[in-house]
Image 1 (cartoon, rainbow, N blue to C red):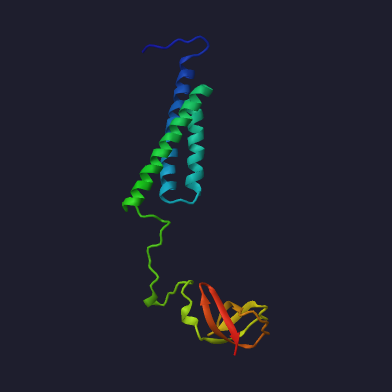
Image 2 (cartoon, rainbow, N blue to C red):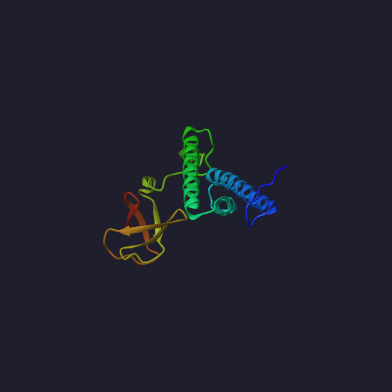
Length: 175
């Protein structure tokens, strides 16, 4: 077996440097795997933080100079960008199940209504929970709503009727 002779270094120190390099490569691989997990299940938890730590330490272990570090860092960022593009493409094609998208539907037939669809309240009668000056809170069928009068002052506990729905605005008058 032939030994490499470098002034000031023996074969043990060369072997140790190779282990640091190998450790750096392993950390980069683990960092990319953790980044993929974080991209598939976002949340910036252990996978995201672990990915950042592994990638940063991996860059330090695999480079010898600032210029090499800058090049490797740009390569790591480019690979992360490609990984993100692939993951987003897979999500858009439905090949990966996105944890961010709700798959259940809330249908009107099951009792769900949109907050923008308040027309069903027209003509309902209730009472003022607060003084209406001209806005305040009214209760209709045991549900509290923010309401507005036609412009006048209505005292608390006065009977009310919803006379108009303007988007999310319920206009009431005293009964």
